[in-house]
Length: 350
Image 1 (spheres, rainbow, N blue to C red):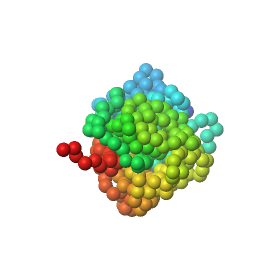
Image 2 (image 1 turned 90 degrees about the vertical axis):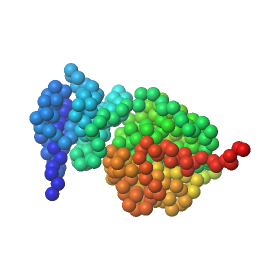
Image 3 (image 1 turned 120 degrees about the vertical axis):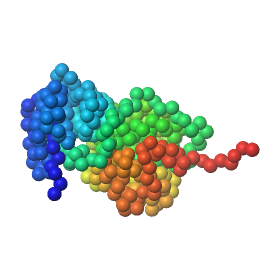
């Protein structure tokens, strides 16, 4: 039997600490070893209790969660799950936390929420048992990465479809920030709360040469445009083979998610077939694996993130095991692989 995952809960609200403790303690594989009301208490508790995982509130007195997270990642790197309000301000802070090196983010429940912190226990267990290397702080991406080696790139008529979940914020920044301005039409489903996807699209847009935006129903797929599925209750698909565009429709969760990577990949398999590249990145669970297999069976080229560079080797692992992944690569090499598969071949000029 595996040892229980030891958790330290850090939040300035006693009520919120009690709720977190109750939700986590209900799982027999988790042990809440302590609580702290601010960063100073948390610092001492980490030293004395040696937790496997810390849940950390972003807004706290004296030292906020972001400042404390930076210290943790510098002095004692470990899995930290941020607990944030589902607001624009909370989204901006959470995205910064994920870039610093937080394992994942969980939204604070709204009043009357019938399932507060749904899925938190699974995230905590994944964090506690993650093989991720926490020996070094994760560098933040402050400025757009210069596009090197793509000066003469000419895109083929292909669609790029990307799916990701836990760890996907940093992974997508590494991939998309290296895209040239004339990248092929690109669609992404990243599992995030609805309040966060717009802010994340804006963040990617500032860091990248192509246009990045949260997808809207009817958006056309165009060269130089990256479209991110909005979080919420609508599934995102690519429709209309002659002039591909985005369809956003209310739908039930598929593979446990809405929007679902499987739904996106399956739609691309139908309308693009061999004229597509599918990429599955870090994430918990199996969403995207069957959809990526549909893409490969339809003739598309497929790429998976390798285990060593994943925060959670879940989605890419399942996809690899069922034969959906053609090649696996470290996150830093995936953009190059995409462009090897989408560049127009030209004869050398004598």
